[in-house]
Structure formats: C-alpha cells, structure tokens
Image (cartoon, rainbow over all chains, first blue to last red; front, side):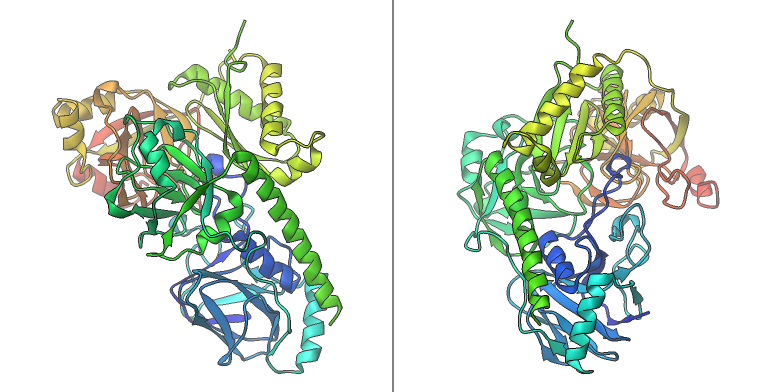
Length: 336
Length: 244
C-alpha cells in the first residue's frame, strides 16, 4: 500500500482511458472526463498514456504517501501542495515518504488528475481500471474514494523508473519540483466557445431554435455530473423541435447534445448511458471535450458551429500535438 | 433485388462513431440484419474498428480515427473512409433471411401497484384505459429482446401493444429505482440499476436484471423472449429473501 486517503475530498475516483468493448452489454465507457489532462499527466511521469490516475473534482482529498513517489497533477480547479507548499500544475514532483499531498482551490477549471509513476494499482475489470459508480464496477471497489482507503501504486515500467530515479537523486529526500511542466490545452489556446457540429436530428428543430442555440448563453446546471452536463437556457428560451414525437433509442457518444422535450440541452459525458432516445441536436467536437469537462456548475458557456470535416481535422491535429507533447516531455527529462 | 443492406442509411454520430440504419420500425427482420452486420464486423473488422452497439433499427460502429487515418490511402476524412468500408461490407453480405439462434424464454414478475408504478395512472389516462386494462395488455404481450443498452443489463423489448404506448416524461426523473418497469413510446423495459431516466414507470420487478458477480451479468440477452407476470406486493416482498 502506498497512498492513504486521510480526507476524501468531494468526489475522487480512479479513472483511465475508459472501458472499451462492452457497450453492447450496456456497460458504459467511463474513463477520465478530461482525457487530454490524464494523458498529459501519464506522459509526465513516464506511464503508458492510458494508465489509471485519480480524477479529482472541485475539492481535493488529503493523501499521505507511504513511500517515495514521482507524481504530477494536471487539469484544473486546484493546485497540488506537498506538506503545505504549493506547486504548479503539470510539473514533475518528487514526494518523499510520509509526505501529505493536499489541494488548494483555484478559480478556474473543475477536475484535476493525479498521476503516480507506476500508476494506480486496482484490479482491471472488463479491460479497464475506471470507476463506474452507478454499477459499482472498477476502481476502488466500484466507488469514489473514502477516508481511510489505501491504494497501491503499480510496478513502474522502464521509463517511469528511469524518471523516478533521476528526480529522486536530485531531490535528496525532500519534496522537489522540476523547473518545467506541461499542462493545459494543446491547440487553439484562444478558443473560448465550445465547437459543435450538427447531430442527426438537427434539421428537425425550428430554424429559430437552430439559430438561437449559437447566439445565447447557457448555464451549466448544478445537476451536472460525470454522466451528463445539463444546460439551462437564459430567459427560459427552450430549444424546440418542429413537432414532437418519440424516437427509438440508439447508441450515443461522449459529447452528444440531446434535447429532451423541455428544450434544455443535455450533453452526454464519460459516464453517459450507452444508448439514448432523445433527439440528437448536435455533437460537441471531440477536440473541445476536455475543455468542456472543466466547466463548473453555474458557469456560462456558448457554442460555435463547425463542420464535421473541421472537427475531424482538429481531432487528428490534437492527437498529433499530444505525440509532440510526449516527445517534448521526454526531451525535458533527458536534459535534466 | 435491392436488400436492406444496400438501402442502409449511414450517418456520423461523432468523430469516433457511425450509425447504420436498416429501417425505421421495430421489426424482427431488421433485428436479423443488425445481428448479421455485427457478426460480420466482429469476425472481419476494418483497421481501427473498436466495437459496435446494436439498436432496434441498426447499429453504431465505434472506431479510432487516428488508426483509420493512418491506413487510408486518400487524404480523406476518417468518417468518409469508414462509411465506404461499411457500405462495401453491407454489399458483400447481401441479405439476412435466416433466423439467428433462438434465445431463452424469461418470465419477469412485476408488481404494478401504485407505489411501484407511479406513472401507471398517467399511461392509463393517456390511452383512455383503466389501470387494470394497461396491466392486462402489458402482461399479455410476447416480447423480443432487441438490444441491451442505456445501462448494464437494460433490455429494450419489442412487441409492446400500441394501445398502451405513451411518450417519455418531458422532464426525466433524476432517480429511478432498480427493477422499475417503464414505457417510452412503443418501447418497454426494466431499469436494472438506480439511474436517472425519462420513461413512464408502471411497475417494478424484484428480479436482479444485472449482477456483475453472475457468470452472465445481464439477466437478458439480445434474442431472448420475455413475458411479464403480475404479482402482488406480498409476492414482491417474498422475493427479497432469496429468490433473486
């Protein structure tokens, strides 16, 4: 055992890239809400990019490290503190045994990702370590972390071990941070609005609703969670279909924007149901999903239309940018 | 002769998923096509294929666009390429005329009393029926399991009478108990876990629809035949002891 949970925080779960291959049995994908941040965290500590870390929401836990570790925290909403000293996001950190990791909130972002060299060692259930709380599957006994939980760190691979040895020599038994880091977006740092392309039922909505969707501001409801973000229109102006009728349920994806009959959009997230029966108005571009997952309840958001082709191109570019970030990180480690 | 496969409609769900639609109705023939297409994809997947999810009228194919992009010859979009692959497969396999293997027959006990079925009165009113008539119609049907989806072990059943069809609630409930039996349009099904949802709730079963500790976690699988049987509150409670 290596990590002792002294305080639980608001909602902390073990998550990896998600559960692939069981959707047809109704078993959800799950996985990190902000994939880019988890991938970055794993890249920094030398793990495989799909290794499990902790997804920490809003208020961080307090974690005691029982042995020397190499860690990093990415994402948003909070900054890591080791024994009371704050460090930047995305920075490789050496945590000596018996240290306390706590979190200090910051006014932007909603979810932080903790990666530990070696990964979080929980049983793999149906191809994944991800926690799916509603079904009690994966992660720490299928639930969010609680006080007094103890988690193991997995065996470090070659790269993770090399980096751990390097930082531990430099740290010489004390908490230590590298003077570089990697966090945040990979493309379009200036992009504010969330980009979407039309869903298969887009044309069934009134022209007025189609237009208004891109003009008005939405508020992220406090009922939003890992399953879905519920959005509220301002001035009570619901998004309406030309005529209302029931649809047959079909598979839905991460980022599918459904409009139920009350006209208030629901954006499906990592723990979305595998199929949905509300009309699919639009699809959040995959390139913006990580950023979208960082919105907090009560925060305001706006949408911007792009084409499917543009969305696909951005997706490929982002994957390329992640490869480049990994190379950049490896070079930084190499240069000491 | 044009087949359902040749006339399949394809459209993009996301950068990682494409829908294939064989028709617009709940129909055993379309179910056979869906199963056949799934089997073909599982047996001979294209490069980048991840998994697929059947629905009443077709299936959704999930793939990794980066892998697809690297195997493409033309510098096209991954979705265009995958659609071509799927069309080609559909053309090759022609038509699905034979029945797939018969599934199991499962009877699901349901208590339709008001506290278990808060929307039963609404379903009755919407269709100008008494509550007893709704229960009678619901328990008289023979249902085919078309797909498992939405949540682990949640079965989508075909064969419900139009006489009790009722649209979804305009505001989904945030919490529905495990075992709740619902109606949405002409669909009926059972919620296996506590979850949010928008279906009209007409009753509840004491059976465990999904249990990750069972060899087959989902009580039902695609292709099974289902009957509903009305039980009393006392019978419902007697299940608590051990039968489920």
